Image (cartoon, rainbow, N blue to C red):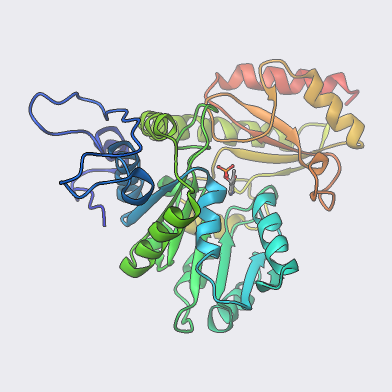
Length: 373
Ligand SMILES: *Cc1c(COP(=O)(O)O)cnc(C)c1O
């Protein structure tokens, strides 16, 4: 378990964690591109034993969640390592609104008979509590992608569970700065470090964090046997990105609230989904369980898919691209993705970056007016 000094706030931990302390050492985490090490000091081979650079990332995220972390080559690699722990024929419970990569993983496994799947609405707290007693894996993603539903994580994660049931929380959207699932009792918390931790759209990485020692060893073993290792440069960049994460999140979150309020009243917008808006169906839960409402807004453009696509093309500062949690604002029509056709056709998912909020609003307002709203 990575222990953050109790007198340090998370923002300070982000700046200081993982740094070398030996006199004469560089101030920053060393970028160590190594596959193997001289025999004698315990560390032999990177895929089995890790590297100093991966360990720096694990220390940063482990301290954020107050658990022990394992870094992977991507968020999906970390997630697959959790599913790898399931016995044959396991029962998996998944939210009805869920990251499409996880849906793909779960469907592929179900088709091969590896597990059976049941989908639940995030707001069905009683259903989730019941699942903790009956399922082998309870997979919670909250806030969810892209409808931004917020689960009553406190109630779900602290519910009595069957021995061996894994309660996993995909904490990518909230980040450990807004929600700490392990504090509530989750077995494992997942981060796509590709998003907020990296924060600059220039790397793929993932981290799984747990307080269960046996589960940590199982995740490490899974990384080793599947070769799901992070790159040296990616781990280095993820640590570098994490240094400014609290600042970036705070700024983008403030802007997201302002933009959500303005989108909510815009004639070109039919529906604005943001957990911070009182009109959001799970706003009351979000207020209770989240420290901040996050930087993602999903809104339905008035009109059809073509109108929404036209808004994307009409934007300048906001880039028409997928992904989220970076310094630059990005927007995308989610129903255009394969497997996402159940979503409202004109739904745009906006990831708010750290640009000036008035510049962002000018861009959005002009693009929305450009399609005739
Ligand atoms: C991006 C994302 C993932 C997958 O992470 P990768 O780093 O792209 O593999 C998983 N869950 C959520 C919520 C995400 O946004």
